[in-house]
Image (tube, rainbow, N blue to C red; front, top):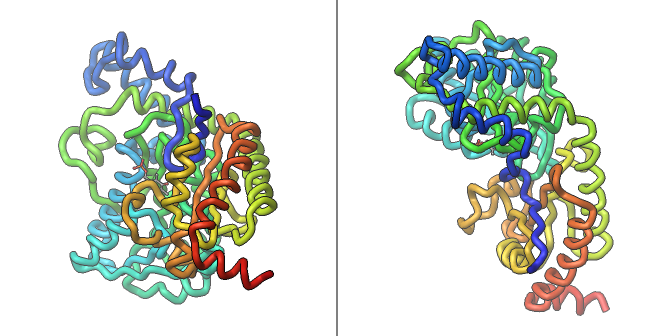
Length: 393
Ligand SMILES: *Cc1c(COP(=O)(O)O)cnc(C)c1O
């Protein structure tokens, strides 16, 4: 059988065995409903609380400030809509960026149709926002700043502490989508002045369909799901107990292994970048050269269609992404690559390779063996490439 190499850890990660093992009893003998007062219920409720504590520890918050959701997208929706509607007496202006995940961008677009004004900040060629521009965008009507911690496509890490400081000084609530940062960057919501933060389990080797929203105590926000008393009446519905237990375990593992994890990823990332740069011409790295996620490589391969590259890689067993998983299948170039100023045709030729805990040096060697061959073959079909090559001789 062909070798299979998964290099799309930013899209999702496999659930670790230790995580699965911890979840299993909550499907079987410990199946109780946390709202029930007899022993079965109490057992489940306790498991939920223990997990909440583990997540709180990972982000430096209090346990009661962590609310479970069905994932990162739900947390983003809740944060933005919940703050907008709860604070609309104070103003109707929201500030975000052009490079957010669609869970943020589409929520903002929805609010724009419902009486809110949204400013979408530009980023520079490395994907960073400008703090002065942010300061100047704040008006007396601004109620929320929502800026992602780290970008899922190009891997750039934003100046979160400085943004938090500006928001605090101006009395504006600050939300950050930290789905990609969690487990890859040290996070302390107090030191960083973060008021709300979205996280997701399946990006840190936990199960899919479970995430959390951190809500600083005292922040005024509307409930997201009305019904029962779960999550302090703010997000009703019987808890996804096994999912919560898995997320808690994944968070504890992430905390325990942060340094070794980041170190492993950085070594593989550098090997990949260096290898590609050496073996392929007309390539460049997207995103910030240093302020980037440990596992993220995003590169432009000129004269090539990213989609063709993806398909060819898939034929030799390599799984990668041409942008974010949510947009592949559409032919529009990624909004993030447009925002960092790549021309249409160049953006089309970009590829995201994200490494993770189970990636090995041999995996990278295999990619470095296959990728140059594929790029070369695809370029042979490009008249533009032929012209450029010809002109050089
Ligand atoms: C994956 C991702 C999300 C969505 O999280 P889900 O749990 O899949 O809903 C949101 N934001 C970013 C930055 C992501 O990478």
